[in-house]
Image (cartoon, rainbow, N blue to C red; front, side, top):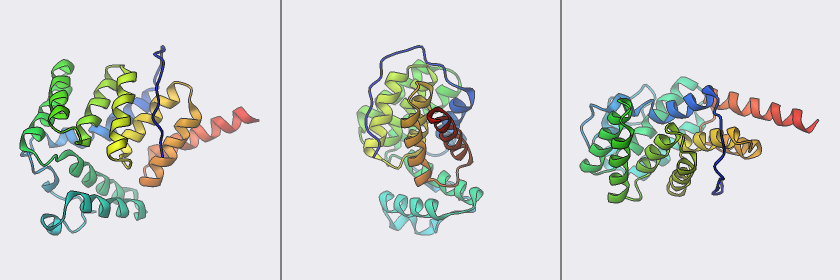
Amino acid sequence: MIEKYRFDVAPWRFTITAMRFFMLIVFGLSLSLLGATPGTAHAQPADKASLDPASSAFTTQAQRLDKLFTALKREGNPDAAKGIANQIRREWQDSGSASINLLIQWADKAISEEKNVAALDFLDEAIRLKPDYVEGWNRRATLHFKMNNYRKSMSDINQVLRIEPRHFGALAGMAAIMSQTGRDEMALKAWEKFLDIYPTERQAQKELGDLAEKLTGQRT
């Protein structure tokens, strides 16, 4: 279990690779769904790895997520696993409320237009209306990361993982922050947790391997 962390603000410097990976894994799908009708995010055209989408109307979101996470862990083909991961993101994005889904779409659009203050307002309102909506916290964590407010990003990441410990996007963010603040052991644990959930993600594998090599060199 990943513990909660507090940080002293310091002049942190993020590598381009880590930052791009965190932003991509969180927003890679969502920005392609800006035209989706609120409340139907999980009903977008399925990837090749789609898991019986016809039955989705007869199951709860929690049941669908459990099924998808089981498939994600078992899938050995990286491309097929990516399709499953995208389905998981769709489930997370759909709050079950048309109003909140619309706020998230507005926030994503504002972020894409570099209107960060407006995006924060939309995300704050989504979280206020539904505090257990994991993607509201995750979007805000990512926006704080983008705005170089790492203390607030970590606070929101902790909220994401409290609601959904399997949130691989939040774990990627935690790993990036830990690594760039010199907490390599904690970064390694976050990547290990990520890969336990999503084993075939190539960039995560590389990040873990690089960290393990670095730590081994420090110990010799």
